[in-house]
Amino acid sequence: MKVIKSNRPFAETRLGNAEQTRPAIVDQRGSALIVTLLMVTILTGLVVDFVYDVYIDTSSLSNWSNAQKASLIAKSGQNLSTRYLDEVRNDQFTDEHDLEMPIGKYLGADIDLIIKIEDENSKFNINSIIYQNGETDDEQLSSLKKLFEYLNINPDLSLVIADWIDPDMEPRITDSEDAAKNAFLWSVDELRLIEGIDNKIFDRISPYITVFGDNQININTAEVPVLVSLNDNMTEAHANKIIDYREDSSFEHPSHVQLAGIEYSIANPLMKRTTVKSSYFRITSTSTVNGITRIIESVMDTSRKIYFWREG
Image (tube, rainbow, N blue to C red; front, side, top):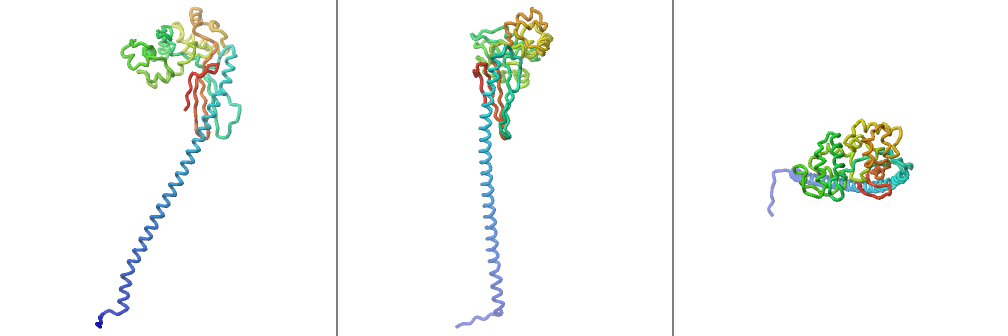
């Protein structure tokens, strides 16, 4: 048997083998640590993602529940408003332009309900410039022009609106029939679609116009711009006389406008266009439940007939 001789001592040889083995063991341990840390990171991410999803789902469910409650409470507000309509129907005259209806019941923590009622008969019915047969009501169109003039708005816009509503295709001014609806407005918001009516103009005219009602203006609730528009000879001074009078005593009949110092030549034509009792009201019911708000807007008459309904 052949014997292999080595110049290194036995101990040195074993030590050399150990030194060669140790780096391999360290590499294995380092890899295991990295894998462990990676697994912990992945698991932590999964847990965080799971917790976040649970939070989102819980929040969504809570918001959905609050939204449903707010919607139901807002509808209840609409029902409550009919009590006011019943009272108005039995009154001799209406002298409230707008009001917030008090809620006499505690609804719960973090729950609010506000009911606002606004008199539509205090406004000018913009649909009235065109008769149902499609012909133009020149008197009403003249009033719309005067309303715009008082509000420092180009009165020619009244002609554009007339062409938007009337059924024919004959323009009153250049291009006023382009893309016209040729039908009555369903909502005041439709005016935004008409060329020449931007947000600034819309915001200026919207408090004084409506598309609902019987075309009768309530002299107990109409504001100065609407009162001025009622007659070519009406001035701001005349309108202020009416407002000053009704602060102390409401008008009980359209003919009583003369009591405010309005001469007969102006008061007489007003009688056929005015009333002292309103029949149409805009009702806005706003409910908030734990920060979630729902708004329901409607227009009703005193017989509780609904002409408009919008939820948001």
